[in-house]
Length: 126
Image 1 (cartoon, rainbow, N blue to C red):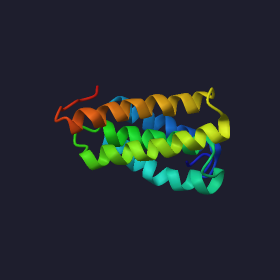
Image 2: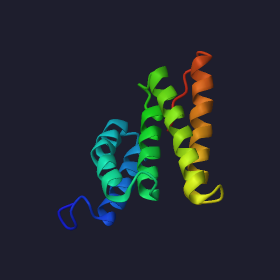
Image 3: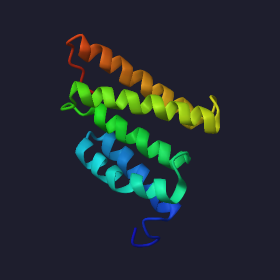
Image 4: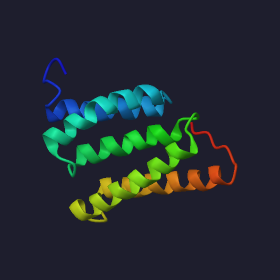
């Protein structure tokens, strides 16, 4: 951010990379913190339908539902948001675009987790 500023697309891409890395090492709270700061910037600078904005939002939902402390409501929120992201990505990019396919795969995982948790099963990622 010091090099390019928070509004630069390179900074936004690096925020995505950083947040995804934090999710990979199960630092969900840190990932959510980064994304809560950068998602509004991406929306302002790039718009709600930009690839980076959609990817940030998707990554946030992954951090939300993969967190071992996620409530049933957190998981439901993730599913609902991912359903919205899927529709937007399909409309903007089409069904074969990598971002659309990644959102769809993520949505399938979130739905499976929701079904498991509603059935009383505890699933931990990692």
